[in-house]
Amino acid sequence: MKTLFNGQIVEKDEVTISFEDRGYHFGDGLYEAVRIYSGKMFMFSEHFDRLERGAEKIHLGLPFTKSELGKMLEDLIEATEVQNGLVYFQISRGIVSPRQHLIPEKGSVTPVYLGYTLPFERPVVLQETGQQATVIPDMRWLHCDIKSLSLMGNLLSLDEAVKKDYDDALLERDGVFTEASASNAWFVIDGVIYTHPDGNLILPGITKQHLLQLAKENNLIVIEEAVKVSQLADIDECFVTNSIYEIVPIVSIDGQAIGDGKPGPLTQQLLALYIASTID
Image 1 (tube, one colour):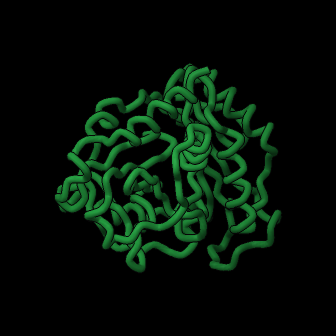
Image 2 (tube, rainbow, N blue to C red):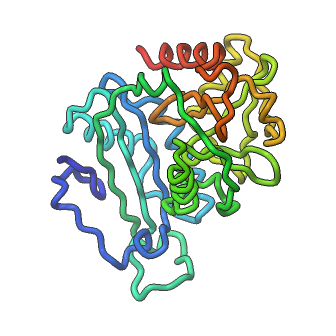
């Protein structure tokens, strides 16, 4: 398996990461997962911009430019011959010895980064049938806008949902829905599409950004406003979005059917628009 490691494409077995790496000790780093369609990255520029913003927030100097990283990932995709799937990329602050909590001065430590590809086809069945979700308190930290390597809060919410026999968790903080365990959440009420505004409580999703633009271009009404959990009975449609699964309908929440318990018309329209936008 070909892997990008610190600027070189090597075999997976050649990748060695020190136990003193701050990514191992603290989850001190960032990641991105970029969708691949027909051998090309989709919205790489937007993913890099988010990576760059995250790096600035955690005081991490990136050891490459947008064009340099883009070229490395393109070479990796070519080497692995992936036509449809994803390219995963992560970067940690690097090795600091001995272990210490203090963040080292920016530029004083050499970051460690790697990337790999994964073949993956569009999850058609999932998109056609939808998922069942449960509402779980959002117990994560207050920097959810940073795509951090540390995902324990997200993992625990999904684990709790699955143990309750649901497919995903819709997270609730202060009485409103924030997002899902690994996706942005959307709701349709009386023909209006709602999604939580960007800020420190949610990840500024790349798919969310693209979908907002598609909705605007097609004269769909979207309001970036949090939906209250108490409005559950008023929700006509619900779906979640991320770069990997695109758009996935939520057909029930805590056992209560959303609409008629099937993917709604606006959800299906947005999915069709999104799929069309991924085709050259």
